[in-house]
Image 1: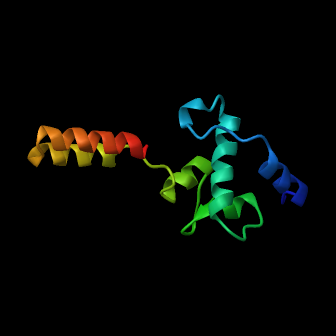
Image 2: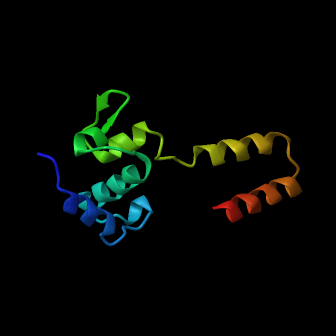
Length: 105
């Protein structure tokens, strides 16, 4: 069964969920958050199955689909950059890098 246009519009204008993953209270709000992420990226879908399909694979949840599309990042790149800089950087350079990272967030 395909959702009606009113259902799609309701999902788009529903009160926004906070972006921080830790602030999501329950699974329903979490899935709505990932649904909204996908709706901003995926164009031309006509139902939920099309929305949850990526590279020919149907994912069970919107979160799994977001993860497959690379929309859910982690902080590993920050750790890697700082560890690399620690091998050759001076203390002054490391402090400057740390401040730059804080300002970027």
